[in-house]
Length: 156
Image (cartoon, rainbow, N blue to C red; front, side):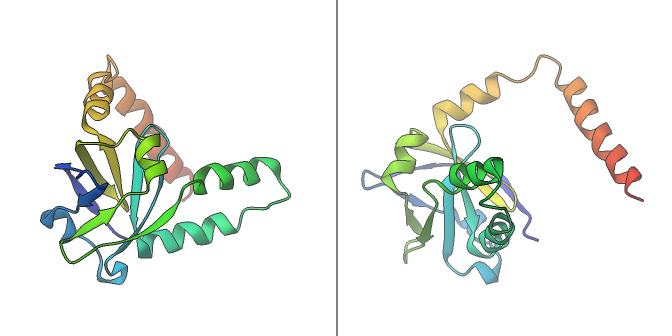
């Protein structure tokens, strides 16, 4: 599984192209080639997946039933706007207009890489989101991580 990491500030040009930073590009798995898939994030951001990671996600989503309303709705919302992107010779990808509008992507952007994905944020929105950090981040971490450990131990 891909383990991307880092926070990168970059700019989107007037044509909607985003240059993938060299330090991030070096982390991409060879299996991904020069392609990504992008879709809407759960917050007002977009998410880039290396193509090999997207194939695994798409495989899981395809297992969901079209006969179960919640699963059908999830598929629609998750896949809405999903597009394949190819890096050009200058390591740029062209972001779809509809996703630029969805996440207010323009000018200064932040790429937040973690796990198998890269979130693409409008810099002002990203800064605003981080400024709304929970008043007691320590308590949130304790709750979330304690539950994860409990689940892992219950699975033994």
